[in-house]
Image (cartoon, rainbow, N blue to C red; front, side, top):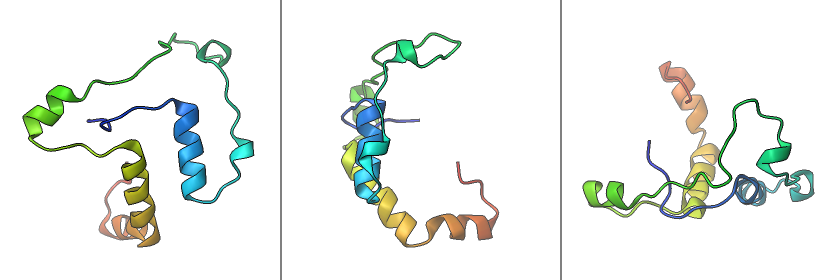
Length: 91
């Protein structure tokens, strides 16, 4: 797995997705990881450094925003339905 070339919080990611698909961003409420009620502790910053991956792949990784734009493009083209027809898992 490789991450985007930049980073954002889960809240920021949710807002970017909501805006891209014209969902109501007021329904996305930020909370701290400490308030989440997760059983296993998580670090406050889970940012991945992609420098080595970009060097190894000799390519620029897309930003989070670029990835969301491509995801929306694929969704509008019915990509998920095409994968289902092929019998491929969506994840």
